[in-house]
Length: 300
Image (cartoon, rainbow, N blue to C red):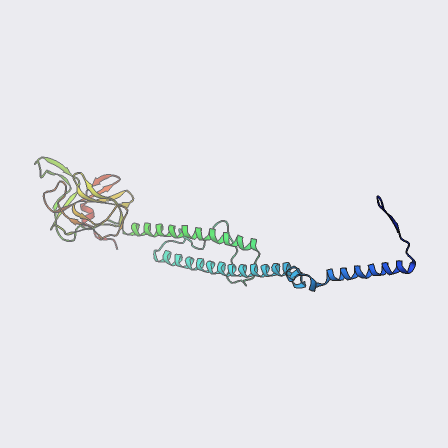
């Protein structure tokens, strides 16, 4: 072995025994260092990687999969419960339609929307894929919206049938009182000149009840020139009735009223000489003689 510096030169000759001793010692020292480096007990605890920790990603993935399956199962159960509620709504709608005597050709709760959808009731509930569950929930949402439209249609049909069956005009627009003036040309009570009277008058005591002569929808409720406090009811098919000179109005525009319902209190508002009801019937916007409707019998 030779070492040469700027001002130093050094050489050493090793015999085979010395050389073998050095190599052996170096090998032992290297082995000990490697062993110490790889031993777990010399590595800080927070830096050691155990066998269980090496499997942590797999365990987390497995737990996540199990959690997802549990959630899907819960959602599937909820989906089935909602579909059961839809069936109950169907039954309710059909019962209401039967009670209202609405033909099945006009209303059918069993009809499905065009999008369709699988029916889970009666089937074994199993864990479904996320995409399938999302599709079923979307189908159910569309079905519920369709049922909502059907129920609104049922309400409209039931109301229409109710009005149609009870809009037959008959009887007097008062509970108590007497017929005081007929339809046609008469002497005007204010100026004494001949004038056309386009209705019939029923006199009575102030605050006496004024009743609807047929079912319909209130189309006017308020003050009107000449009529005072006026109620107007639309009975459909171009037929309307008017009740004038009221003291108090008990219904509002848009209210659905039944035949015989109290709609106002008798008074003398507007162009009037005393408590009475001015009763008119209009057909397609023109006043007609109400007397034949007053005198005819109620329709059973």
